Length: 625
Image 1 (tube, rainbow, N blue to C red):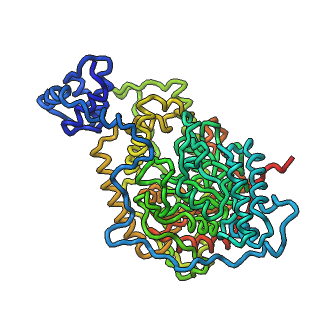
Image 2: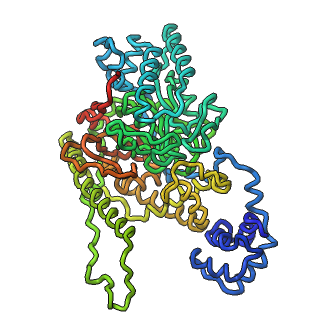
Image 3: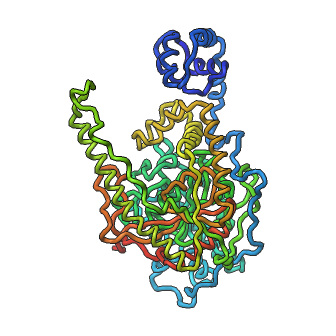
């Protein structure tokens, strides 16, 4: 009985390792003593190659002579923290990180301190970081009082929203007391001093589980603090909770259930930064840290009405964070206001000597940067209605008597077709309704005196380039798949990680490289499209979401209005992922910056947010009993 790993190693020895063909052959050969030429021939059509009979014979001859490679690598038991030796750099030749302001400047102090502190401290729960910072700086509120208040809210609303994985209560109280002692001694650490925050539970925190939201990892501990955690500790921020993420950073389904949208708890919060967005929107902490590989800050920020920043790839160190895709993972803040994101980014950005992708020196926020001088583009085609798909001509469909066998659909097939049709129509109606928010945004920007320049993204096959993410994710969790422990993950559908990891093992190595080359082409062409503008405005779920995640551009997602009573109702579906939108829920808008251009990006987004005020609205949560 030939061993699978030795079998696959044989293909590595003749230059066919890691392609679809050997994995397909192995599936055909299980339980058989040897591989036959017929098996190879059957596998060729799946692999997309055509071999001669001599080549097949030569492959058979090599099977028993080259059977070591994969086995030796498997024996290393590579942990998730070991990165590949290949690095993705969003900067093209001749580019360098944009230098920021030499001096950090916040906006003018808000009047909250002069107004005094409400008798009920929970009235400040939805204050911005900037406003909370002023209360702490002026000693109107202590770090301990804020921590107690937010811990109470985390406990109260978790049964409804399911955003907590682990409360870090002891650590938080000790940190808050230290912050109060420091301030009493005249040691004020800056705008995050004493402010409670939450970490997406893919960030390692010493002494607490780091579960990655996944079944089978519930008791995993990592004996270190992630770089971002260390930096926020140093800034005086108080970690109060490790928050949910969809298992292994997909969606909002984790081993404890589904994290919910505070605006409509019958809906999921989206993901994978599910807990950070939900808890921040619900006023249960001052800010949070999420991550994005392909929409994991953008999507839950949209669903929950938060303000999320996806920094430039390479801006924030990922040391101590779960790896999903080494060439696409990014960490960033999820807050209630744009300036909050800027203040948090200032604390977490810059090299740490471990994450080799991090470039530049850091980030400095300048609230006085004149946004009126910026060149602003907009993705014209993405703001226009999507073209209707061509209707099938019934006259062209095969009919009985045409010489083509036409089997009538089964009741199950007919029901599925009808459900798919209804789902497509519901999405079309939602998209049609939501375009009013996009159009209103363009009008508002124009009334602000901004001359919008149309920008066109290059017409490239962005979706196929995502095969890089899938292959890297399958490698990051290789042992999970090979051991069969992927069965412990909660979600097991065709679009969930277990199936995606298995499928990704059949991506040919050649096609991974070809996708990488296409991605480089995208970098070059998108850089040209953006070279005459500082910031680009776009709908949040347009082509740009995939394209700019591939190129590493920064993006700021903010609330852009709320659906009214005339909005299409959310579908009543057992699939919570399909239960989106509906009256009372938020829409969003995205601002995209140039590489390392967060300063200008944030300046414009903050000006727009201040003019619209959508971030000030709070979700209709049940009051205290």
